[in-house]
Image (tube, rainbow, N blue to C red; front, side):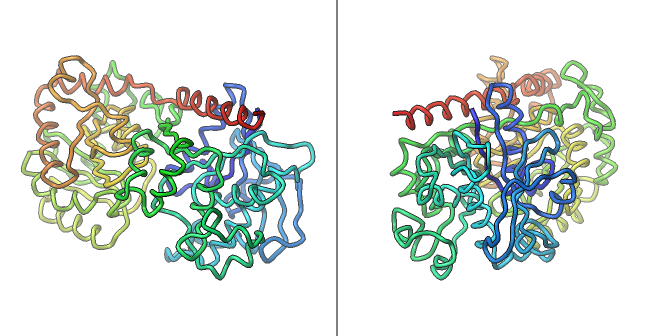
Length: 481
């Protein structure tokens, strides 16, 4: 089975969040199950710099304002098609905006081009390659499915995976004339969305199947609260909606071999976490004592519930716990957390920014990790926590609810607890969860049992890949039918 994946990000070449981890790991997991996945990505500078041995397999005299070509590349164990369009992708800054953080005003054109290339490949543009299924990820590649619907690849099964419904790619109606779609596409059942053009909406409308990255999130987005204006369409497509929880790369995230850690360990040698703990204390200026260290590794945003955390920090310190925070984002939240660290020297430490190596050390040395997201399609941070014996404390939403077994009395007695859930998502409920954590931490046998149970959890892509293969086969059966 040949699957074409279209995505703006893929680990390890270009990453801004969990999307890249998924699109980088899934092809490897699928290969073991007889599915060959090739991935189309934009030719961002980091990608082009790494693509020394590339071969042009298709050329565009004109694609959204300039010359472009598709190159066949093998990098980091991945089979890739790279869309080399310097007028669109050869820019400083991040993949979506400049160094100051402002979005590029022509993002609609950049990702329309990616989508056009995806649909062309699906329609047989590249000699010797014809995918059985096309799998698009998030709004940046969603228009692939619209171009397929109105083009040569209308009969090719397609899947749209939503990693976060909050990001939709909405643009004014004035761009429609430059998209290269027939006039009929500018309709309610096409790409039209509240009078403009909706990239994600178009993909949801055209896809043969829609997936989200957890079963609970698949149900949540059917409600007005989580549907972000698309709940009507999603409910209309509910028979084609599936939730498949993400896995993680267990080779990269492995406390037994992780080179970022000061000390490696296993579930049978939890005491070997101590040097990592000391490294966290040093880096964040925390007092050295036996109290639990609770960490946060997150974008500091409203979605991630960081304002809720900011209101609870004094209470967290009052429980006796220490707090280590790594993240960046909203300036007001950064300031509030830095002010809390100044109020509670030795009990709260904050590092503004992102440091991949430090995030590993925190998972390997802290006792728990707080994830108070208002909505979380899947979440990977809690999965890393499970893997590293850093007990997750999570809001009961989306993938957080699906992946963490609450350490209530019954779950502890049965030996199945892996973390602490809280609801409603507010400061009082979060503090109650931290108190429960502190109580469990005071009993080493109880706490280590929770850590070890989490570390036993199968977090690999194996089961998730099985579900994708099952869904691919279902789509193929519909094409035959």
